[in-house]
Image (cartoon, rainbow, N blue to C red):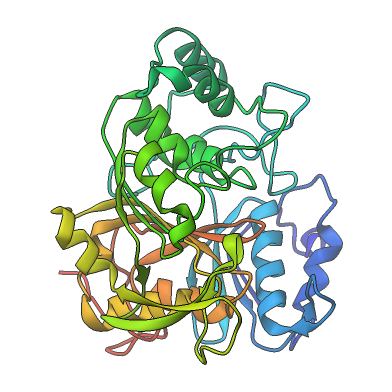
Length: 384
């Protein structure tokens, strides 16, 4: 596209529609370019191509995930997943991401994507302006921040500044800090409380996406983990409401394979070390603790994510309106199918991380195409 600019005397575009029957990955050739796209919105077909997955197989899901990560790399979020196209809109600013172990300043788990910080309202909507700089944040952590659990203060400060040499505790790939920096920073610095759900809580500290929000920030929450080997420590070491059950689309008993960190629903019950566990939908757990809104939901249930998400749409269709941010593991699901579902429920895909999709509620409902939406399930709303 850059080569076309001189021919027409244009140096920017408002809309680029790219539909070249599976050849869309020509974009990959720009991956190492230092020249950012000067395009506001890109309508990118993602229906006719495949790419290689980490396990050596090829699939369209891996291609969509790679395309989403590539667009993140160049500063775009996925506003919506349509039937045959992804709608990518340029972010209002760059993100802080990841943590370079050799430096105190942020670098990216989306390679090349680093810069200023985002701000969101409590419901997850993007704030258009920000006065928060890295230096201001660093000063706040150093002088004003006090951990909810004083025994964890040193760990909290190191974690929040991205200074850990290892990730023995907290998120496996820095998701907890990425969320803090890019989604919840203004809320946290203003001392506002929050509520989280971690489904697939697993170990109370290792590979936990919510440990930081519990020990450091004092958020209330739910920890759902059906494997009894983790029950005692979750109850003793975390402040969240613990349930030794699994999350599903309805109230039911399912076979669960007790594989430690890789525990998962076993549809046939034929795997070794399988037990029958009780499962409920998210709405039932929230009612049990008197919670009506969720700031952060971390969903990691080893391939059972889609039934859980679809169950909310069928059983509690208004619940999505009260969930601001979802971090959903997506390396064992059809990424396009998941993105389509989340688009239909009012979410944009802020980023596709190494193993997770990060979804944030849009500020407003979208206007759909005449009365029927090109995003299945998205209600058509017209301006008044």
